[in-house]
Image 1 (cartoon, helix red, strand yellow):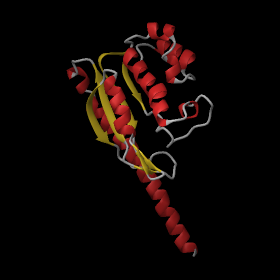
Image 2: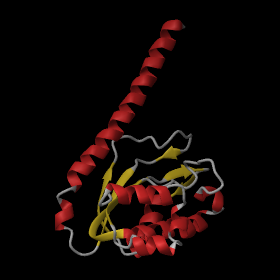
Image 3: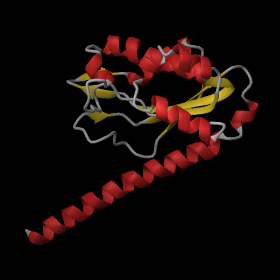
Image 4: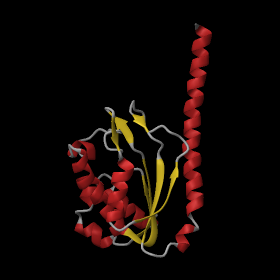
Length: 193
């Protein structure tokens, strides 16, 4: 969250279309927004599980998993740590998955980098559903990871449970709608046969 609508508008105009690892190289941005934000929440790309169009997408820029972790994820987390206020929360949603019979352990690898950059894991919680995007890859359950920066977390703990409850409800409702559509489609197909 931003402290004012004008600040939010300024960030939107200057940064919304830039990859996070590129923003981390912007000294003017880093100077202006050092320990500026009260809260960070995002769902990063799941490496090659969710592919998006555009040559600036991290999965197009970095050709190996190791390069992606180093040049995209590490820089993104450094940016988050630099811009987040002390004793505040950062939350993200990720999931590991199996591709070509090989486990891509995003949770373990990404969280390790997050902790190496100074964040402390407070809690992790399962999401309500199990679908990740629209892909044929076999996925594990998505998890919400809650990290904090600093040493005092008493004040921020007050706000965690409502956030988690909302996230779980959103995911569960989405999963139920997809399940309902599949069941409805099966009934219609059965009647027509």
